[in-house]
Length: 135
Image 1: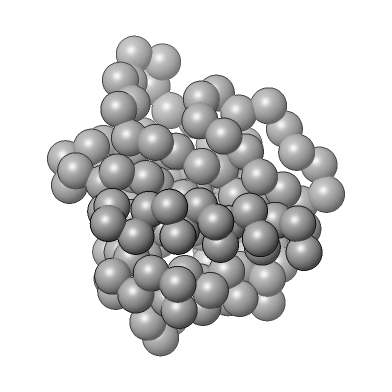
Image 2: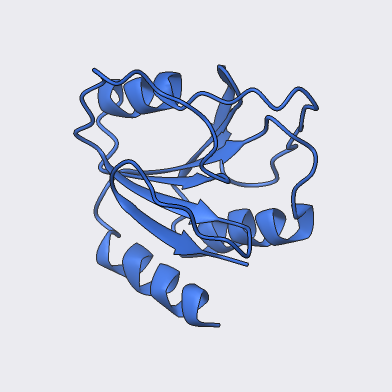
């Protein structure tokens, strides 16, 4: 319950900010019920959140409500396109559900606040931003 409270406080603090929730869809070996619950949570707490589904490229950007999430089996994940999109769209905070095994260009300049939501028992070191274990 600790992560839910932390996430709820973060969303309350950002009610007047532009928020996006990205989901790493590069593998179907994920906790789909947990991820669906996180999406539902964002939809209830911040209904104007944009939902981004991406693996090595952005697959879709949709409203947060009633999404159809499609997972892939190739395991290739890149954060570059999503981070560039967030910057271009003036997203204040990007929440990213991922195991943090994807890549991004080293020279990529990230101005958006990034909060990595890791649905795993192991919390890896993140390249920037803040990581929260949501398992």
